[in-house]
Structure formats: C-alpha cells, structure tokens
Length: 109
Picture 1 (cartoon, rainbow, N blue to C red):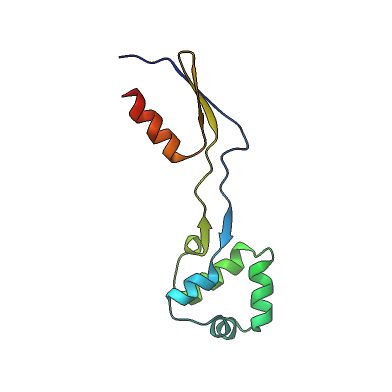
Picture 2: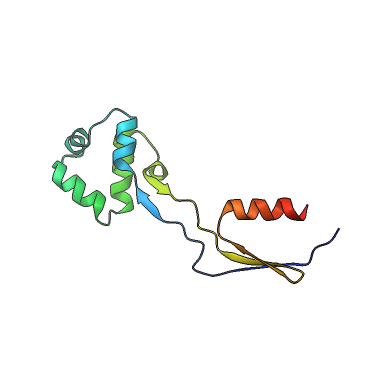
C-alpha cells in the first residue's frame, strides 16, 4: 500500500531549549553548591550569578571538572516540540506531539 504523504513543519516549531542543571548534578554527586563554590575559589553568590547569567564554556568546563562530569551533563535538553500538518490524500492531520505521530502511524499501517 502506498500513501502520498506531505509533511510540513514550521521553522520555529521544533526548538531545543537548554538549561543549566548544575544544582541537580551536584545533588546527584552529593556535593552542595556552597562546596562547589569553595572548590572554585568563589563565593556562593558569585557561583549563583555565573550559573544564572551567561557562563562561558571555560567556566562550565571548570565546574564539570570539579564535579567529575562532562560539560554536556550540565546541560539539559528539553524534548523538541512538534507541530506540523500531514496530508494523506485529502485528509489533513494536525500533529502536536509524539503521541499524535504514533497514532497517525498506527492509523496508516
């Protein structure tokens, strides 16, 4: 069986938002933020300001080295949002989630 499927996505609909997760990783490693600040030679206030500001890759590498993780472990990636329209024949399907994609895939099997 052959389906003529057109899939249109909107350029800004798939986004990956990154957020630092330094506190979470420290907790996982049994390290308090104040201990991390002490090991970095800065105050807890300076640590918080840097983490919540615009930290450099060098600063993130220093944090990662002290905690004992990779820099990428300090960055959280949200699942991309999905928005699109799929046309199968004359039928239009609006896609807003992975579940919508799964349901449509099941429907066309």
